[in-house]
Image (cartoon, rainbow over all chains, first blue to last red):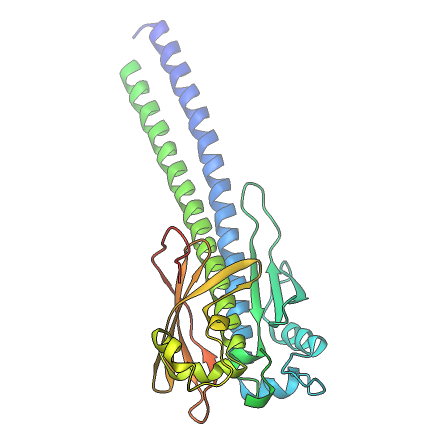
Length: 142
Length: 149
């Protein structure tokens, strides 16, 4: 074993070790981001299911339906307060409400903080009282 | 010694490349899963728009399969099947592919403008033609474009 062989072997091993370490670090970052993305996605899905389950309860109707309106509509303030109170949202998630321009109901947009190199994590749910059986037959608006 | 160093380097590089590939696959799976959930949200919104549209005179049409609506309008005064055939919700157009009532429930298939198709089971009020609930969406195979009526 000559000195030259030892030097060349050391250089090759050091170079490949450095390159491998860089790739491992990149992979670890990627996995950490993907895991966090999945956690946020699970929280959003849990929030969606919880909202829908609650709206399917008969008791929900009296809490959030606007009884003063001739049409069957949500009371926006009551709906927002009720959902905010009951939703198992993590502190990182944010909620935004908006009325549907066609009067179909209210949109609930739940979003997670955006991460580098990942698409925005956002769910947009339409909540319409008729779809949950919360409208008496003669109150349903087209 | 050199062959040993080369072998060790190759193992290190191939191992790190494999781990990196796995991490990218995990990210792609996560993104695809989230995309499916967003499509499901759009289809759920379309199903809710359909249910809202059944709130007027068109509720009567729920008693018949959508294929029979042209004939059923005679039995449903002032009903307009086109109100239930297409619409727009959240800047996405939807169209009805099929409605089939089966007792106290009905099968609803909707298609979005981008070709995505979803199927729902709607719970029907046993006392009157009205929808009282919507099942989870079943995503179906995508077709390239919106089908003509």
